Amino acid sequence: MLDNRGPERGLTGEALRYVVSGVGLAALYSAVYWTLAARFGVPVLIANTVAFAVNLIAGWTLHSRWTFAGRRTNGPAPAAYAGYFAINAASYGLNSLWVWTIVDHLHGSVALSIIPVVTVTPVLTFLLNRAWIFRARL
Image (cartoon, rainbow, N blue to C red; front, side):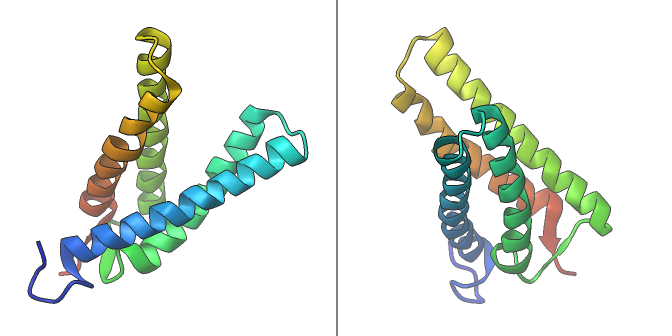
């Protein structure tokens, strides 16, 4: 699905950069969460919240400057920030729903709950960010 501008641009290039960004952001989240919770004994929900906030800021910076480079944000900065936060908060909620449904409700394994978390949610998040927050330059 390469467009005529080469693999570094267009949907394919953005999707590839989103995957690379996602791996880096997952590593950052994990490092912050683990360091706070395991090394410093911070309660896990607080460590999770701090890691989410760090990832939110790093994600905005990475996506706005690299993943979706060449696109403009939808509206003034505060509106774009709010939309980006809303998408990420929704993805957090969706992931929580996957975990609750598969592990608690259906009594499936934790490993099984990871499948939609790492496949469905990122695709939806990418599409929402691309369509709503980072629009094509006119």
